[in-house]
Length: 234
Picture 1: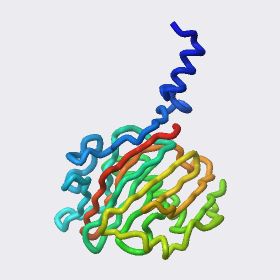
Picture 2: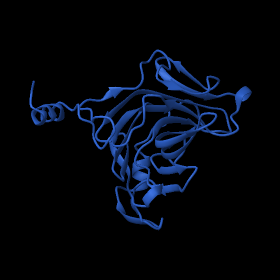
Picture 3: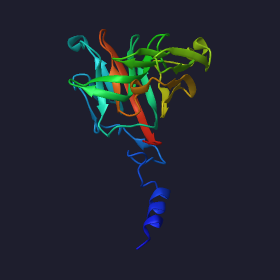
């Protein structure tokens, strides 16, 4: 049998020792969608299904949601990670997003950080805290949130209009969310949309669930595919 220290070093080198009490970092991306069904996800089946290989959220006239509804990934919580995938809207209206480091309540309700997507020119790529501090960073902003909650725009990651021009909401669009400690980055089609340091103490979530949002009000349809997660820490 190997001495205890050598066993520990071996486990550490192979990634089997967990980081800071959480799950072990993964060297590779793990697929969260299979293109066939909603295995590993849970939500209101009146609104969520798989269509042509893509997770599909739809609000029809017969089933208008009274509030946003969410499809929740049941693979556990994620702290530090790199999440990526593709989304698209079908039609001339849409409002959706990816929740992360979030919390679940009854009825598939979710609060927490969201990478926002829409059919429109205002919200795609921004950082919103649903059920909390709301808009923490607008597209193109580099932001620091202080301990007192004050939002300071500390720089720019690009011209908002030029970043918006990269987005084709009715075409498959790449998205990425990178969360490391209190540093949060959203990307669309390979370009950084926001770069945020959230320093507001207990309000800066360091762990939580991943979910997809379907917003309320008008009929709409959004699709997601090829969602992958790589854990990089907690």
